[in-house]
Amino acid sequence: QQQVKQSPQSLIVQKGGISIINCAYENTAFDYFPWYQQFPGKGPALLIAIRPDVSEKKEGRFTISFNKSAKQFSLHIMDSQPGDSATYFCAASPMNTGFQKLVFGTGTRLLVSP
Amino acid sequence: DAGVIQSPRHEVTEMGQEVTLRCKPISGHNSLFWYRQTMMRGLELLIYFNNNVPIDDSGMPEDRFSAKMPNASFSTLKIQPSEPRDSAVYFCASSPTGNTQYFGPGTRLTVL
Image 1: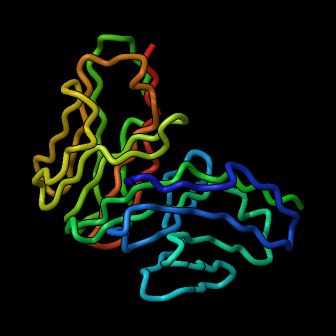
Image 2: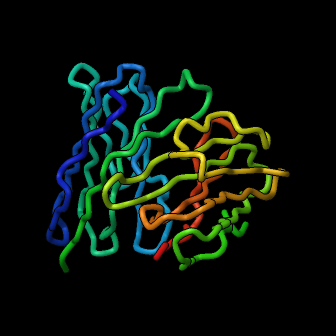
């Protein structure tokens, strides 16, 4: 129940294309859903996050779509650029623990070809 | 701000040796987290401190692992004795309570 399932494991997209990464969860106590971006040799960094009271959140080229009934959420990267090549992790946290007890997906390695 | 600082960045040790990983959180952040990242298990939360007090250590794999936070600007994660299966990248993260976690660059541990 604590798992967050992420797909695909890897993704190759052409420059200018749309990258889509999907995540699914079971625990209905999760109410905070961030996406983290990690470059090689670096720690993960928060990219964008959403709470279940909205179905979509957009920040620049990055959009989270959230489907509460299906318990799924996804990251869309519009106009993908080579600099977006990184590993992306979805995560989820219940807020009733009093802190962000993040459960991470397994990661998606994105390669944007020039 | 320098961000979260971790040392060493790389550690190679032999099985049975004691390993100590260090973390300096961002000034003013009162929450600190230790994570482990492996190919097999991904990113896992090991322990969470709030105001220097361990709040949740349910992710600590076994008694060989211990963590301390003697003050607001320093934390250690110790493995004694170390085993090859402890090889991983260990991340420290800090946050203002309940808010975004900022990760350090990690310590890559190799136990031979």
